[in-house]
Length: 459
Image (cartoon, rainbow, N blue to C red; front, side, top):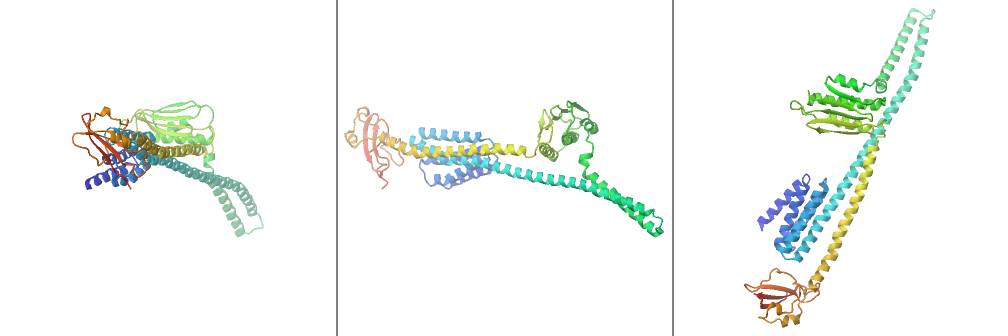
């Protein structure tokens, strides 16, 4: 029906729209649509088959986008239980329940597992690019450091030669045999050489500023902020130069943020003996200004580059900046290296889980479905002899009937009015061309009032 097609289309469009941010909701919508479509018909018709790819795609993206797999796994479990319960109690019995289990396994669980694997693989790829970026940055830093060292060496060498040249030109300027014009030229040359030496010294002062400039202490940074700050400095040993500059940078940026976003708030700065730094402020007296967040990003980058750990976020209505710094700068690839190893281990586990889930589902279907068909047919056989001996008007308890029926209510088959019918296998082989044939026995009260051999052969 047209309205049914439109309804299913709307459901799956909604599922695709929210699968990135609400993967469990999207997966639940897709599973519900497919289950309703199948359980209404209790057969794999065009509608059920048409919805199968949409369910598989939704399951894949739900697994791919779920940060925590538990919610999506719960959605799959609930759909499986609900489908089996409805099948057993309302729609066709154990045959339908088996079909529901197989359908959700193939269209839901397997694509979801591949989605989880794809997520782990993407995380590993992201770590790889991050690692490459850090290596490139380290190479640039090494080149810059080498250039600075080379510039220093050139300053020492060229500066010495310029000083020597200035002395020689100065001596030439005092030579009594020179004319006034020559002496003026020598004076000009000496002034130029001296100016070149001074400019070279100025350039090197800029290049070496990070190494030579004194670093402000944490007390000086707090004092310069102009805030009423409670300072707890438990560090007594001197700090490495780069680590000291990092402490300076974190404290200065954190206090700047307090001034901008929480002026007047109670603020505390604490540096432990093990270089654990905390800058905490209480709630802002007035609505805070909206910031870009780039300062905190820069701090995180700065702390990571020296091998430290950084975090920042709300606390008790205020805000807290936390950093753990090493005693000496560590290799910058260490955090990425550790993360890469953990991600590689996780992707190996994800691959194993994906293979295991897929294998279990496929083996369950390949073994379970034929096995159930054999069991179902063999345990519900009413032989031709038993069927012939069943006389109309006999009581049900007096008949020689199997313990199980083949199906509860086969589609397209009806019995006489006001009767309750039983359906049994005609033979034990569920795979030949007579597999759909049934013996129908219908009872009114407890007496047999109708029997029929239903020939429903597929060719």
